[in-house]
Structure formats: structure tokens, C-alpha cells
Length: 193
Image (cartoon, rainbow, N blue to C red; front, side, top):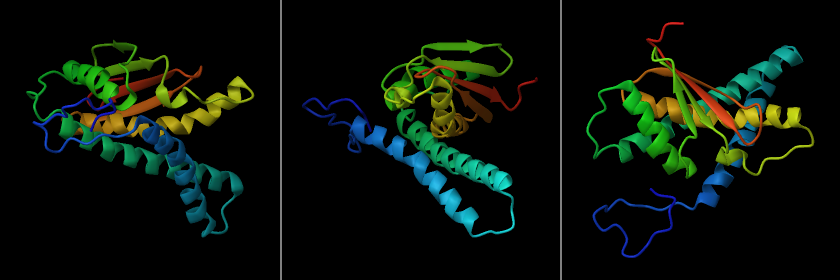
């Protein structure tokens, strides 16, 4: 799968090559969050007796789990497909670099802007113009940051799934303080705090 415009002759050596419109991918990402939130609201409406605040928190958690699980599976599939012709990575840092350069380019059409590590299993990926946020706008900055947070849950799952497929168990957290930027913190499970 590629987001690039196919140039003739198409890659004849890859009989499974498919192409995906990047605008379709953008629309999918835009619609996934409201869909997951709607499903969580519908499922929690069937239960009665919970307070509104607890119910709202449960809906948020259910939305997070659903989007993270979808992203996890997508990340696994992408790595299975695009790292099959590469030698196995021997170092965690090499795996993270593959994620930042090759896979990020495949999914978001650009490389990660900055990668930092403490060399103890914690990596921070910074994307100053995160593609899903490129067209997002709100009346106030704080409203935009709050509304943008759920749109980071699917990419967190993609990162976690990709790393799991390459043999690295990790937790991924994301945040944004200024649109369209995003920061992803990856902690490998063996990392000491």
C-alpha cells in the first residue's frame, strides 16, 4: 500500500501492491473518533444507575480502548507488510528509527521531526505538523487541544502495534499543546522509571 501517486509502469515485482488515496485516509481518521465515541455512548446508555460523571469517564475510556485496538491492528499489518524484505532489527533504537523514518512516511507522508531518548527505554517522537491536525481549528486554543486529544489515540495504537510486531512491548502516550504539533512518548516495558 502506498500513498504516492502511482507512476507507470507500476511496481510489477509486487503483485500485492495497492494504492490508497491520502484524502480517503484523512476522512477515515476524521470519522473514526466520532464513530467510536458514538458506539461507547450507545453501549453505556443500555446500563442505568451510574452517575453522569462516571458514565462520561467510562465512555472516554471505551473510546480510547476501541481506537487504540484499531490502531494496534493497523500497526501490526503495516509492519508485517513493509518490513518483510528487511533484516530483523537487532537494536531497539534501530526499530524506533524505522518507525520514525519509514513507517511514519508511509502513514503520514513525512518523517518525524525529532526523536529523543534517554537510552533507558524511553523515546519521545515529535511531529511539529502532525497531518491529522493540519486542518483542525477551533474558536480557542484550549478547546482545540482538548478536542484533538482523542485523535491521537489511533496513532498511539498504530505505534504500539508496529512495535509489538517487531518484538518490542511498549506503552505509548501522546499529547499536544499546540496544534498542529503532537508528541508521542514510547516507554518500553523493560524501561525503569
